[in-house]
Length: 306
Figure 1 (tube, rainbow, N blue to C red):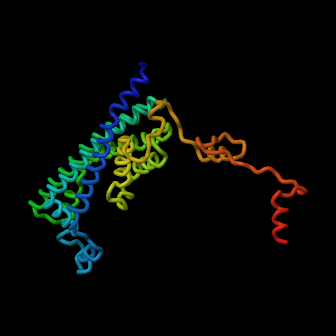
Figure 2 (figure 1 turned 120 degrees about the horizontal axis):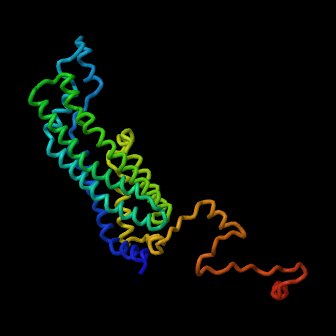
Figure 3 (figure 1 turned 90 degrees about the horizontal axis):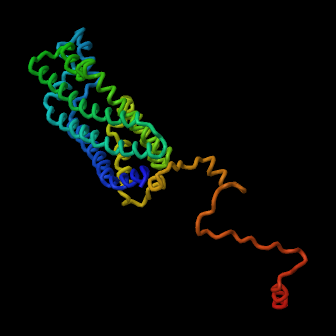
């Protein structure tokens, strides 16, 4: 048994475990995000334009209490829920690492020797999971200090809302998130290129990675829906319990890229290289009929009409 056959046997042996890990990661990210957004933040106070302009409307240049203080007070009262939601999402991020590493190894076996994206997904996933909890703990600590001191002014609110803790936490957290998104997106793209993932799943993973690092788009997508769908779909594909069969590249161990739209069109043209599907019968073309020849049944039909 050569190295390729040994690697294929190892892939097949680990396939079910990786499938379960991928589905679990998707469910954990969904549960943590949904709990944080729709349970903990269900009664999050909103600050409208009228509330923000109330001191100025009353002739006060600078109000004694910043309207944003309601957000800090809310955080101090929901510390346990916020940390719990962040911890679940963090565990889900850690559970995403084995499926991505497994897919990266499969890509490398099929000719795409790129270990960089595997390292990006591993290191970025760990950093993202850790700092998701650390940032929330720092925010909770500052919110409690804010409530204990009782200063509701603008300076105190600004200090309490800077939950990143300055550059000490902001820089590694942002870099880790970017690394994780790049690793996630590139592994999905390369897996699609060698035929390990279908086009829809490969494109879905690439788009999910882009949404993961753009805060503006995250406002329109509170839950990482595409990321969750990709994880569960990938796990279902590896489990081989769905109607979709594994792409041929998983069994052959070779890169089998999908045909492009141009190649498909060329195969449909006359004289193209497209192959007729197995079991389909050839089209029967009727023989041409000469103008002078009449059908043997035509004379019988004329006799009957008389």
